[in-house]
Each structure stands twice: as structure tokens, then as C-alpha cells.
Length: 175
Image 1: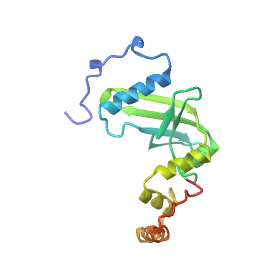
Image 2: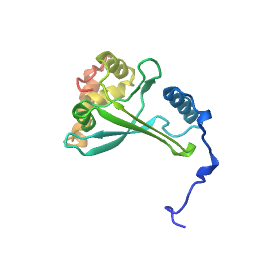
Image 3: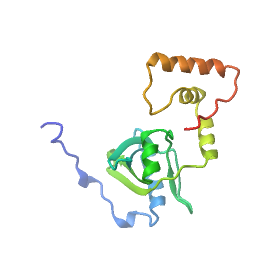
Image 4: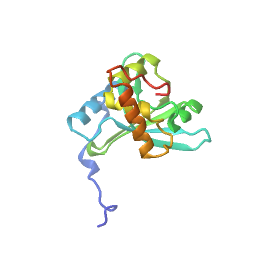
């Protein structure tokens, strides 16, 4: 049997409506907790689907960075404002998120409208990242081609030297 012919016993795990919370955000949070307890690799990985400015569908995997199940429920992810993903969302704000938790035989699909987070949220998230990550983000015009690995490493080295005195690395404008 080749690898495509193998199958999983999908009947081994059932799901009934009585097992679900009436609030889908509360249910999502429960399942995310289940996934984390099961030690699924990258439990917060999700496939983000957008429509590019030319109308073509586009998908990529990103990480869920936060969520709120309260009065204004939302899912948070980050992107560079100059990235292909951000440009697509600037043109068409509709977005889908797919959480593929295959090992638990679950998946969640979310459809909604993307909104940019307030600058204070971006600042706080950037400041919470490790210093080397902040320097790497400042050195790279993320989602843009680089001249060479050597050029990128030189830019990183220049920023390491510039901020060697311990000053905060500022969040790049497009971040």
C-alpha cells in the first residue's frame, strides 16, 4: 500500500452537538487547550486564506498570537505591512483561518474581516520579542527579496553594534 492509500480510522473519535459549547469562541478555546495538552506540534499554527489584489486566492501558514472570546471576539496574527499577505488584506479584508489539528481529528475554519491592530498592540508585541528577533526584524525588509545573505548579515551586525548600548530596538514602521 502506498502512502496515499493509507487511511485513518476517522470513526474512532466521535463528535456530537451535545459535546459542543453554544458559543463557538468558547468551544474554540476549549479545543485549543485540548490541542496544547496533547502536545500537538505548533498548536497555534493556522492557514490564512486571502484574495490577492488581482483576485487570486492565496494561502500561507502563520501563528495565532492571541484571541479574545469576549464581547468583540477576534483572532490575532502578525504580518509585515509590506508583505504580500498585508497587501492582499488591504485590498480585500475578507480572510479565512484554518486550524488543521489532524492528530486529534479536528479542524476549525473561521471566516471574517481582518483589521489592523492599534499601534500600541504592535508596539507591545514587538517589545515582547527577544532582542535578537527585534534586531532581525529591523534588519530585514520582510517579505521582500534581499540582495544576498551577506548583505542581510551585515545589516544585522550594524544594528547589533548600533544598539550595543542596551537601547531599545524600535519597531519598524511596517511591522
